[in-house]
Image 1 (cartoon, helix red, strand yellow):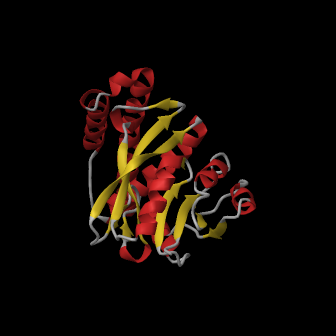
Image 2 (image 1 turned 90 degrees about the horizontal axis):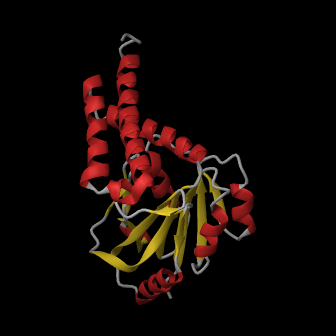
Length: 254
Protein backbone atom coordinates (compact mmCIF):
# COMPACT_ATOMS: atom_id res chain seq x y z
CA UNK A 1 0.00 0.00 0.00
CA UNK A 2 1.25 3.49 -0.87
CA UNK A 3 2.49 5.61 2.04
CA UNK A 4 1.73 9.29 2.60
CA UNK A 5 4.01 11.85 4.26
CA UNK A 6 2.84 15.31 5.22
CA UNK A 7 5.63 17.88 4.98
CA UNK A 8 5.45 21.05 7.09
CA UNK A 9 7.78 24.06 6.88
CA UNK A 10 8.20 26.03 10.10
CA UNK A 11 9.95 28.90 11.80
CA UNK A 12 8.69 30.02 15.22
CA UNK A 13 5.28 28.39 14.82
CA UNK A 14 4.58 27.38 18.42
CA UNK A 15 1.15 29.03 18.21
CA UNK A 16 0.12 26.87 15.24
CA UNK A 17 2.12 23.66 15.09
CA UNK A 18 0.06 21.57 17.52
CA UNK A 19 -3.26 22.12 15.73
CA UNK A 20 -1.52 21.69 12.36
CA UNK A 21 -0.04 18.30 13.29
CA UNK A 22 -3.33 17.13 14.79
CA UNK A 23 -5.05 17.83 11.47
CA UNK A 24 -2.34 15.79 9.71
CA UNK A 25 -2.45 12.81 12.06
CA UNK A 26 -4.06 10.55 9.43
CA UNK A 27 -0.77 10.44 7.47
CA UNK A 28 1.80 7.64 7.73
CA UNK A 29 4.55 10.16 8.51
CA UNK A 30 4.78 13.84 9.45
CA UNK A 31 8.04 15.64 8.66
CA UNK A 32 8.73 19.15 9.95
CA UNK A 33 11.46 21.15 8.19
CA UNK A 34 12.42 24.07 10.41
CA UNK A 35 14.51 27.05 9.29
CA UNK A 36 15.67 28.13 12.75
CA UNK A 37 12.93 28.41 15.36
CA UNK A 38 13.80 29.99 18.69
CA UNK A 39 10.47 29.21 20.37
CA UNK A 40 8.87 25.89 21.39
CA UNK A 41 8.12 24.67 17.85
CA UNK A 42 10.56 21.76 18.03
CA UNK A 43 9.49 20.58 21.48
CA UNK A 44 5.81 20.60 20.52
CA UNK A 45 6.35 18.89 17.18
CA UNK A 46 8.52 16.12 18.60
CA UNK A 47 6.14 15.54 21.51
CA UNK A 48 3.45 14.80 18.92
CA UNK A 49 5.57 12.25 17.08
CA UNK A 50 6.67 14.35 14.13
CA UNK A 51 10.11 13.94 12.58
CA UNK A 52 11.83 17.31 13.15
CA UNK A 53 14.75 18.45 10.98
CA UNK A 54 16.53 21.79 11.22
CA UNK A 55 17.57 23.14 7.82
CA UNK A 56 18.50 26.84 7.44
CA UNK A 57 16.83 28.56 4.51
CA UNK A 58 19.32 29.09 1.68
CA UNK A 59 19.48 31.44 -1.27
CA UNK A 60 16.81 29.40 -3.06
CA UNK A 61 14.21 30.43 -0.48
CA UNK A 62 11.01 28.52 0.15
CA UNK A 63 11.37 26.39 -2.98
CA UNK A 64 14.70 25.13 -1.66
CA UNK A 65 13.10 24.22 1.66
CA UNK A 66 10.31 22.31 -0.07
CA UNK A 67 12.76 20.48 -2.35
CA UNK A 68 14.88 19.55 0.68
CA UNK A 69 11.78 18.20 2.41
CA UNK A 70 11.27 15.77 -0.47
CA UNK A 71 14.62 14.17 0.35
CA UNK A 72 13.70 13.57 4.00
CA UNK A 73 11.05 10.91 3.44
CA UNK A 74 10.68 7.72 1.45
CA UNK A 75 6.89 7.92 1.28
CA UNK A 76 5.25 7.36 -2.09
CA UNK A 77 3.04 10.46 -1.88
CA UNK A 78 3.53 13.81 -0.16
CA UNK A 79 1.17 16.53 0.94
CA UNK A 80 2.62 19.94 1.77
CA UNK A 81 0.97 21.71 4.67
CA UNK A 82 1.89 25.11 6.08
CA UNK A 83 1.92 25.42 9.85
CA UNK A 84 -1.00 27.86 9.79
CA UNK A 85 -3.18 25.54 7.69
CA UNK A 86 -5.60 22.82 8.80
CA UNK A 87 -6.79 19.74 6.91
CA UNK A 88 -10.48 19.10 7.50
CA UNK A 89 -11.75 15.53 8.09
CA UNK A 90 -13.50 15.37 4.71
CA UNK A 91 -10.30 16.43 2.95
CA UNK A 92 -8.28 13.87 4.93
CA UNK A 93 -10.56 11.06 3.75
CA UNK A 94 -10.31 12.26 0.15
CA UNK A 95 -6.51 12.44 0.33
CA UNK A 96 -6.25 8.92 1.77
CA UNK A 97 -8.51 7.59 -0.98
CA UNK A 98 -6.39 9.18 -3.72
CA UNK A 99 -3.17 7.80 -2.22
CA UNK A 100 -4.75 4.36 -1.90
CA UNK A 101 -5.95 4.38 -5.52
CA UNK A 102 -2.44 5.34 -6.63
CA UNK A 103 -3.26 7.20 -9.84
CA UNK A 104 -0.42 9.71 -10.36
CA UNK A 105 -1.49 13.35 -10.62
CA UNK A 106 -0.72 16.73 -9.07
CA UNK A 107 -3.69 17.84 -6.99
CA UNK A 108 -4.54 21.40 -6.10
CA UNK A 109 -6.81 22.25 -3.20
CA UNK A 110 -8.97 25.28 -2.51
CA UNK A 111 -7.66 27.25 0.46
CA UNK A 112 -10.00 29.46 2.48
CA UNK A 113 -8.15 32.28 4.21
CA UNK A 114 -8.98 33.44 7.72
CA UNK A 115 -7.39 36.81 8.56
CA UNK A 116 -7.42 38.00 12.18
CA UNK A 117 -10.37 35.69 12.80
CA UNK A 118 -12.40 36.73 9.73
CA UNK A 119 -13.08 34.45 6.78
CA UNK A 120 -12.18 36.42 3.66
CA UNK A 121 -14.22 36.08 0.47
CA UNK A 122 -12.81 38.86 -1.72
CA UNK A 123 -9.72 40.97 -2.33
CA UNK A 124 -6.16 39.72 -2.03
CA UNK A 125 -7.10 37.13 0.58
CA UNK A 126 -10.04 35.61 -1.28
CA UNK A 127 -10.02 31.80 -1.54
CA UNK A 128 -7.18 30.54 -3.73
CA UNK A 129 -5.94 27.22 -5.10
CA UNK A 130 -2.56 25.69 -4.23
CA UNK A 131 -0.92 22.48 -5.46
CA UNK A 132 -0.17 20.27 -2.46
CA UNK A 133 -0.66 16.53 -3.17
CA UNK A 134 1.48 14.46 -5.56
CA UNK A 135 3.78 11.44 -5.89
CA UNK A 136 7.06 12.36 -4.17
CA UNK A 137 9.42 11.75 -7.09
CA UNK A 138 7.37 13.53 -9.75
CA UNK A 139 7.69 17.21 -8.79
CA UNK A 140 10.23 19.97 -8.30
CA UNK A 141 9.76 23.40 -6.69
CA UNK A 142 10.97 26.78 -7.93
CA UNK A 143 10.70 30.35 -6.64
CA UNK A 144 12.02 32.17 -3.56
CA UNK A 145 8.59 33.50 -2.56
CA UNK A 146 5.16 32.27 -3.73
CA UNK A 147 6.92 29.17 -4.98
CA UNK A 148 5.34 26.79 -7.50
CA UNK A 149 5.77 23.25 -8.77
CA UNK A 150 7.26 21.89 -11.98
CA UNK A 151 5.78 18.56 -13.06
CA UNK A 152 4.69 16.59 -16.11
CA UNK A 153 1.82 14.99 -14.20
CA UNK A 154 -1.81 15.69 -15.11
CA UNK A 155 -3.30 18.36 -12.83
CA UNK A 156 -6.49 17.79 -10.86
CA UNK A 157 -8.46 19.45 -8.06
CA UNK A 158 -9.53 18.07 -4.69
CA UNK A 159 -13.21 18.46 -3.83
CA UNK A 160 -12.57 19.56 -0.24
CA UNK A 161 -10.78 22.57 1.24
CA UNK A 162 -7.94 23.70 3.50
CA UNK A 163 -8.45 26.31 6.20
CA UNK A 164 -5.66 28.88 6.30
CA UNK A 165 -5.27 30.91 9.50
CA UNK A 166 -3.03 33.52 7.92
CA UNK A 167 -2.48 36.03 10.72
CA UNK A 168 -3.60 36.17 14.33
CA UNK A 169 -1.42 39.04 15.63
CA UNK A 170 0.15 42.11 14.05
CA UNK A 171 3.52 41.08 15.47
CA UNK A 172 3.27 37.88 13.46
CA UNK A 173 2.09 39.80 10.39
CA UNK A 174 5.02 42.20 10.39
CA UNK A 175 7.57 39.43 11.00
CA UNK A 176 6.36 37.69 7.82
CA UNK A 177 6.00 41.05 6.05
CA UNK A 178 9.68 41.80 6.60
CA UNK A 179 10.82 38.31 5.61
CA UNK A 180 8.74 38.09 2.46
CA UNK A 181 9.48 41.61 1.18
CA UNK A 182 13.20 40.97 1.60
CA UNK A 183 13.01 37.65 -0.24
CA UNK A 184 10.92 39.20 -3.02
CA UNK A 185 13.37 42.09 -3.44
CA UNK A 186 16.33 39.71 -3.56
CA UNK A 187 14.59 37.55 -6.16
CA UNK A 188 13.89 40.58 -8.38
CA UNK A 189 17.46 41.80 -7.91
CA UNK A 190 18.86 38.46 -9.05
CA UNK A 191 16.66 38.67 -12.16
CA UNK A 192 18.00 42.17 -12.88
CA UNK A 193 14.59 43.75 -12.51
CA UNK A 194 14.71 47.49 -11.94
CA UNK A 195 12.14 50.04 -10.83
CA UNK A 196 12.35 53.71 -9.90
CA UNK A 197 10.75 55.50 -6.98
CA UNK A 198 7.80 56.61 -9.09
CA UNK A 199 7.39 53.05 -10.34
CA UNK A 200 7.38 51.71 -6.78
CA UNK A 201 4.62 54.16 -5.86
CA UNK A 202 2.67 53.33 -9.01
CA UNK A 203 2.79 49.60 -8.30
CA UNK A 204 1.59 50.24 -4.75
CA UNK A 205 -1.37 52.35 -5.90
CA UNK A 206 -2.33 49.72 -8.48
CA UNK A 207 -2.19 46.98 -5.83
CA UNK A 208 -4.71 48.84 -3.69
CA UNK A 209 -7.05 49.47 -6.64
CA UNK A 210 -6.79 45.82 -7.72
CA UNK A 211 -7.45 44.30 -4.29
CA UNK A 212 -10.00 46.76 -2.93
CA UNK A 213 -11.98 47.62 -6.05
CA UNK A 214 -11.33 45.12 -8.85
CA UNK A 215 -11.23 42.05 -6.58
CA UNK A 216 -14.02 43.32 -4.34
CA UNK A 217 -12.08 43.77 -1.12
CA UNK A 218 -14.60 46.43 -0.07
CA UNK A 219 -17.18 43.63 0.28
CA UNK A 220 -15.20 42.24 3.24
CA UNK A 221 -15.77 45.40 5.25
CA UNK A 222 -13.11 47.00 7.42
CA UNK A 223 -10.82 43.96 7.23
CA UNK A 224 -11.05 44.08 3.45
CA UNK A 225 -9.96 47.73 3.55
CA UNK A 226 -7.20 47.01 6.06
CA UNK A 227 -5.66 44.17 4.08
CA UNK A 228 -5.91 46.08 0.80
CA UNK A 229 -3.98 48.96 2.38
CA UNK A 230 -1.40 46.56 3.79
CA UNK A 231 -1.01 44.81 0.41
CA UNK A 232 -0.27 48.21 -1.10
CA UNK A 233 2.33 48.94 1.59
CA UNK A 234 3.84 45.47 1.05
CA UNK A 235 4.25 46.19 -2.65
CA UNK A 236 5.80 49.60 -1.98
CA UNK A 237 8.27 48.22 0.57
CA UNK A 238 9.46 45.30 -1.57
CA UNK A 239 10.30 47.76 -4.37
CA UNK A 240 11.99 50.14 -1.93
CA UNK A 241 14.14 47.22 -0.79
CA UNK A 242 14.94 46.43 -4.43
CA UNK A 243 15.97 50.05 -5.04
CA UNK A 244 18.19 49.89 -1.97
CA UNK A 245 19.91 46.72 -3.20
CA UNK A 246 20.93 48.55 -6.38
CA UNK A 247 22.03 51.56 -4.31
CA UNK A 248 24.29 49.32 -2.23
CA UNK A 249 25.62 47.66 -5.38
CA UNK A 250 26.54 51.08 -6.71
CA UNK A 251 28.57 51.86 -3.61
CA UNK A 252 25.85 53.38 -1.46
CA UNK A 253 25.19 56.39 -3.69
CA UNK A 254 21.68 57.84 -3.81
